[in-house]
Length: 282
View (cartoon, rainbow, N blue to C red):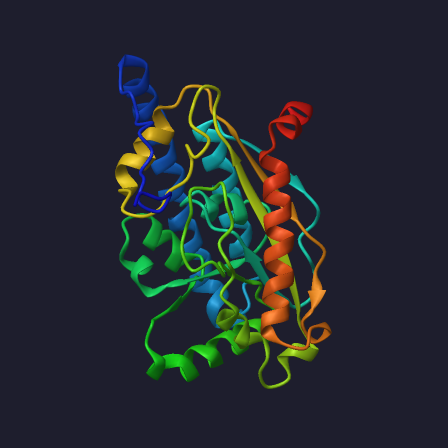
């Protein structure tokens, strides 16, 4: 049986003369911006870390600028609705693509929570480590240590960003949120001092392309997907919607909190992907 999980989009990059030129120009600019940003970030952290410890008063702004410029270089338009919360807490969002890193970092100071394997990925891994990503291993023996890391970062004022689906999708759906990931918010009194903000990220495909053009999932290779995006002449759009934050202790259980966030994110994604909504906002 074939499902969306096993299907890889057949809408591949057509690297004709124009596509090759765009890959070269955008790729070079993209690499320069990311590498310069990483270098600047590391220099700032050399001063920032001994003076501020876990707090990062300056370096997140470099990350935001790099991510905004990267989207401009790719030619992808970007729209934000709602506002990132200022209260102490965490952010949960749907996960569709490696582009999520840029889309969600471009408009807020946030620190991703990611599986440990990502740290070894070319470029993405370097960017993730430099920007303060929290890497978690799927090892029950490390659960207590990881829980302590979450608590320390949240109490330090960091906005940790979780992808509760546990994997990326084709961008057209939201998978059930894993409530176990919300258990970190119900420990040592954290539920009384923090809020959770759901965020919906919708990718609107370029004209003439399949709807899941920007989706990156399953066995898709990062390099080929990157080339496809860079080679696309007329790009699509990213919609980022910040929903109202909710207090953790307003929900009697992690399952209730996960269900609320999932519904918020899914309802907005479906609305953003409707053809009539796209037409009215173009």
